[in-house]
Every structure is written in C-alpha cells, then in structure tokens.
Length: 178
Image (cartoon, rainbow, N blue to C red; front, side, top):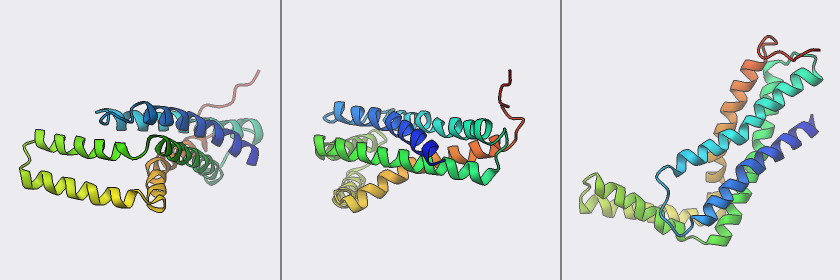
C-alpha cells in the first residue's frame, strides 16, 4: 500500500505542482487573473482525481473487488497529503523565484474591485490596511505554509470522501473481467 500511496501521491503532486509553479512564475508581475482561483482549484481537482483511480485500482486489483470505506478513505487522505506537500513546495519555490511582488498586485486588485463596487475612500483604506497586515504575517513561512496546506488539502479530503463512499460499493464501476 505504501507504494500505491507514494506513486499516486507523487503523480498528483506533479500534476498540481508543475502548473501552479508555472502560472505563478509566468504571471508574477501581473495582477491576479479574474479566473485564477477557479483555474487553481480545477488543477487541484484534476490532480486529486488520482485518488479515485488509486482507490479503484486497489479495490479491483489487490482486494478482489471489495474495499471498505475507511481503508479507501485512508488511502485517499495519504495521497492527498503527499500531493499537498508537492503543492506547498511548488508555491515556496515559485515565491522564492518571484519574490513577494504579487502581494502588492493582489492588494491593488482587491482595492480596484472594491472601488468598482462603489466603495468609499474609508472602505478602500480599510481594505488596504487589512491586506497589508495580512501580508506582514504571510511573509512568515510558519504562517504561509499552513495557508498553502488549507488551500489544497480540503479538496483532497472531499475527493477522498467521495471516492471511498462510491467505491465501497463493489457494483459501482466493477472491474472488467475477460
């Protein structure tokens, strides 16, 4: 099982880490993309689809077509943890290459969005002050790394729950014979 966890975790980690790194480095000097968050979570979901594949293969190839919920869920969580570590490493590497210029770009985008909605000068100043305070703490890796972890791991948790829940039924996508 350790081999399965490592194999699928590394594959998921590379699928999520490489695009996340590339997007961060390529768009470092630009304001955040309006659809950037959706793109990021789509990449995470694609990468973590390896959880479903791993649980199904373990059920069909190693366990005779039957897997209980908790072992399937545990397998999914272990894979998600490894993928999360790759995601964190990719973000940290991208941040070390690009610096923290994105922080100012992100703040300016937040202020511009609020201004478009009709926010007054006091509200805009409040947003800027709130973001500046956040970025002070975010520069600390002991704060930043948990933030990165909670961006991806809940997606892995959800995929693990769904995968284990569906695949515990041996009639759901049964193994092909013949």
